[in-house]
Length: 72
Image (cartoon, rainbow, N blue to C red; front, side, top):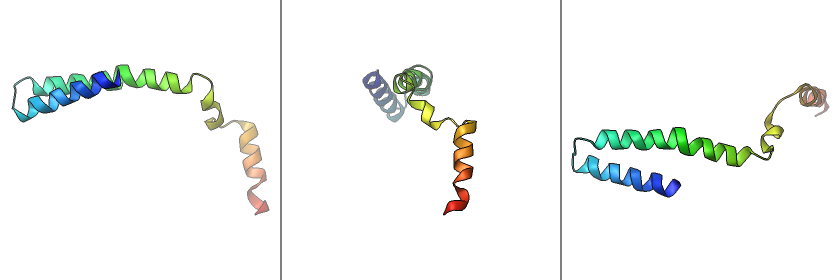
């Protein structure tokens, strides 16, 4: 999927350089592809195993952090 994005954007840059009338549409569709199709797949793949849980603040983590504030 990322290779398709790179080829698409390279084609768009080429069309911008030759001043083709549809160049802006090709570039816009490339950004649309990246942001709404490719990025959600990447986020799902990266965090599907619960790796995100260490970044979530909950009451236990906050208590632990505030308990250790004055001990330095």
